[in-house]
Length: 139
Image (cartoon, rainbow, N blue to C red; front, side, top):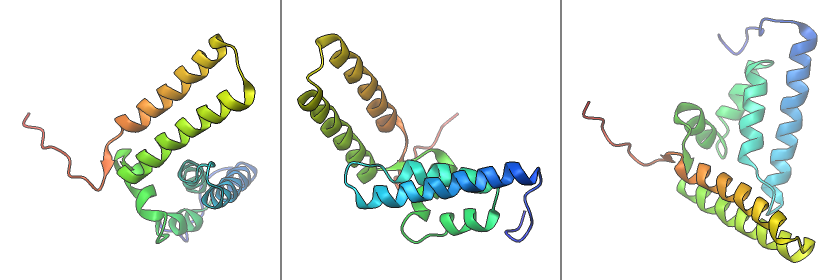
């Protein structure tokens, strides 16, 4: 499908996907400015929304000089750059520390939040690293 072709489907559904994509781009821009708010996940979601509503905006995101390579790596193989993994895990750790200092949770809640955040960090670390050659499967 070329970027000039309309996406098939109901016009209202496409408009909904378009609005959701624009909202995610706005959140991604805010995340690029604010240190503790993520950027890439919102842009990944925006690209998915634009794939269902506006091929032109999807292409714009995928070709963006700053964010395009990361989005393309995620789309191709679910890969995250090493720097992104480090930043995400540091953000998770900082967020948990701020949670402990600000909320003063009981040990059970703190343990539950720690487990959820550790699960997110484990998922991030388990993804392939973008830009690194993948091992050849001998099979």
